[in-house]
Length: 285
Length: 38
Length: 222
Image 1: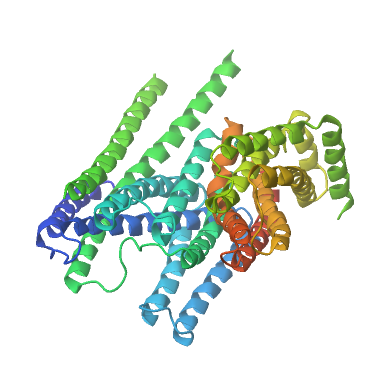
Image 2 (image 1 turned 90 degrees about the vertical axis):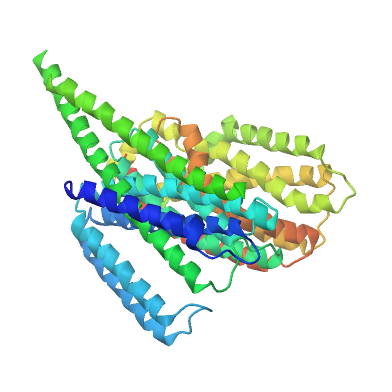
């Protein structure tokens, strides 16, 4: 991986520049919102990247917890497979929500299982914990960007910085808060088992997210609020620019995460070596 | 309009800021490795 | 309720009854909120009924955190947790006892504060007032069950007192939304609180199961 880094770096830079050009110049101007709408091309890909990273954190946390007991590990594998199969079957049996393709739901189910088993294969043992730290940190970075670009887009277009009933923005805020708490817990923990405790928190966070979504959804049916970010269909040309930006940011997120991962690996080795050194010194005395 | 440039600028400021913290942490680790090797 | 749970619960209640530490600090915080915000209330306006719901739960939230922070402090000081880890008693008995103890403390607080709220904010429920008796325990349990669990998570952290609210609040947001909206709905009579009550019940079930499932892991992880 190390020798690929410079090449990937240049590719990423090229992709990001191209994506920026597309977003600012080539993409068509929105009819009602004007040029400000172009924030959308940075806001949405950052959100998708953040959610992907947080999902990886959730998977890594579960893996770490589950792998401590081999029996539980095997049960978890079957449960994940079962869920994936259920989603795939359900996609073709149950009518999907409006605007969502059946094949998209099935693909998501398969992707979830694939990610789970990939992480299991590529990040055994303690590496799952390192993956958890990395994805949480980089995820928070992207999530912060979502929360800043969101209001910056909302203010000129809808006249308000924030609407508490806006599902997407408020759910993102809660997710951000949960992961800030996660990072603080990791930072301030003086336990020897920080990894386990952090993983438990990640699981709680994951349980919370659907409840947050649901509660805000009902809240807004009682208190009608403007839908920030607009709904409805997107001009295919805009969708194209959106996807270009997303791919560019995915490459970027990958490189940043990889760098952070290397940093964490080195940091843990240094800490281990320092611990050994102190042990030697105490014995020598 | 300024909102548009502000949003793009903030995005990159945050990303560059985070990368800077990574670089600084890395430099500090390198120093500690040198200390250990002594 | 198992013998261990009952014994621990009675012990905690008795200790609290003698010292009244937790209840006094909780009362102080709750009173502070009530009095300070009573200045911003126009006693006749309709608005006050809409804001009161949020204020009441803010007061109880801050007060609960005071009690929750103390949950494990006594156990920590006397190495009780180590003894527990070694003993054959199931970890969940300890958790249930602690959570129930906290639940009782906060309910007592709520019972004491309710008349004060009614007086200071001139409250009169326009909706079905009996529903408040459902919302209060459900909401309190939501705060207490997660609070007790996160208090255990934060035991071995520096800045323990800040870590608990930091962990608790984001996770509790659906419950807080439910509590506040339900209370506002009941007080103002404008909409039905039924959905929020169901939300609170679901939240309680989900997180009680999660806490019971993971407490042993946390206890042994310190």
